[in-house]
Every structure is written in structure tokens, then in C-alpha cells.
Length: 319
Image 1 (cartoon, rainbow, N blue to C red):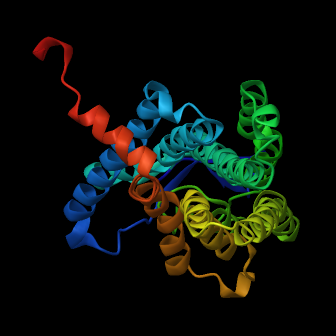
Image 2: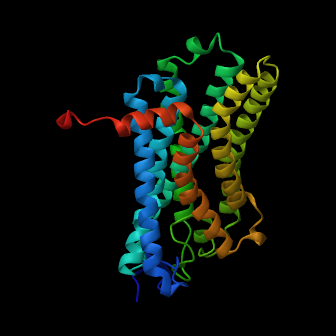
Image 3: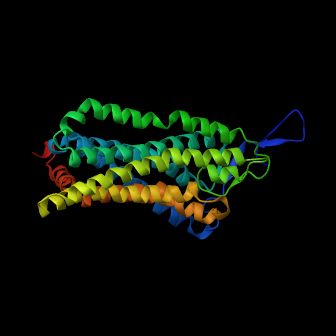
């Protein structure tokens, strides 16, 4: 029997340990899933790690755009490290339990980093807007001090609200099943386990989703409307092509991230199902971080050239 905390009334017990159902419905694929997720995790760490390194050491990439890209890669490593290591441990040991404190911590970091990603994508769109729509003012506005201030603001933006939302979710009584039909601690599957009225919590989820998903997304859309309008006015076809190529990678990542997040947190409760929640969560917590290094490296000539230079560089001891 899993631990429960008995209250003074004697007729109410709250869950102290949760159990992830995760991929338990695929008993014959546990080894395959472990190998797949392990390789995915290594790829995410390596791909995003290389982007961080080249933006630090290559002089061509010492620009605001690549400063924010390095921040984005760092964020992706942190974001995926909140969930994937726990998934790997669960698959390897087949012990899918998680303590209340660990579940609270995981969800808090997951929400904070998710909010950070949304606002960082908006800042990256603003950087592209300034670069293309106001090229003369760009070096003055997007100086190093401004970039650092924007980065710090982005990393701290979601902390107070998401800590508050986490505390609100875990203040609910979990007196029924302790089985989370998911592979990490997220709000929708946890609310379904809570006893009593959860309407306030559900409303807060929608408000937070609007604040941390829809508002940044609308800011990004507004930036790109201006960007595309400016690009179409460029006289040179080469100039238009180059401007589009610098923005297309970011736009693809925006659509991947915000599309899956919006469907997960803003669709009606009646449309929620455990299977669709898991699929969408795999998409924006694992698939998107995998695709990001490929999108930015394959579609960006500067990044590709810097990677080749780094990988083909002779080590000091070999020269």
C-alpha cells in the first residue's frame, strides 16, 4: 500500500506518493522505449550543446540573434531534463512512483521553463523585427546590455505566477486514485485526480495559458506581419530570400511549440483524453527540442559553417 497521510478527522486521506501509468500499456516495448528516449536525450544534449558552444567561440555568431539562440538551446536542455531523466529511470527500473514533493518540484520547473520558452520565442521575434524593420536603429536598441536585460527578464518572467499555480494545484485534496495517467506531473492529469470542486483551478489554467501562451504568440504574429510586409517591399530578390531564411527557422519552432501547447491547455475539458494528452506532451516536451537543433542548423548557413569549422578543427595535441 502506498503512503497516505491520515488527518485528524480520520475519514480523509491524502496521497503522499503518485504512480505514473506512463507507457505501462506497452509492456513489451519498455526496453525499446528506454533505448529510443535515451538516444533522443543524448541527441538533444549534444545538438543544443553544440549550438551553445559555437555561438560562444565563433566571432561571426556574436550577434543578438545568436545570443538569444544560445539562451534558447540552454532552455531546451533544462526543459527536457525536467521530464526525460525521470522517464528513463521509470522505464529502466519499472518503478513508476514519485513522491508528492518530487511531483510538485517537477511540475513547478516544467511550468516555469514552459513560460520562459514562450516569452523567449517572443523576444527572438522582436529581435528579428528590429533587425529587418529598423536596421539603422538595430545596433543601438539591441545592444549587449539590452540583450542581457531581456534574457534575464525572460528567464524570471514565469517564476512567481507558475509557483503560485503549482501551490494552488497541490493545495487540492488528492483523496482518490494516486495513478497519474501520464509520464510526468502536469496540471490536466493531476486535476483529474483531485477531490472536490476544481473549477477555480481550471479557470486559472486557462488564464495562465492565455498569459503565457496566447499573448506571446500574438506578439510574435504581430512582429511577423510587420516583418513580412517589410520583406515584400525589398527591391532585391536575393535580399528577400535572405531575410525570409533568417526568420523561417524561428517561425517553424514557434508553430511547433505554440500549436501543441495551445491544444493541450486551451481546448475544452470535454475534449481531453489521456491518450491525446500524452501524444501532445511528447510532441512539445521531446519532439520539439529534438527538432530545434536540426531546424536551426540545416536552415542557417552561418550555423552550418560554424559547426563545420568546429568539428573539422584539429585538436591542439594533434597539431
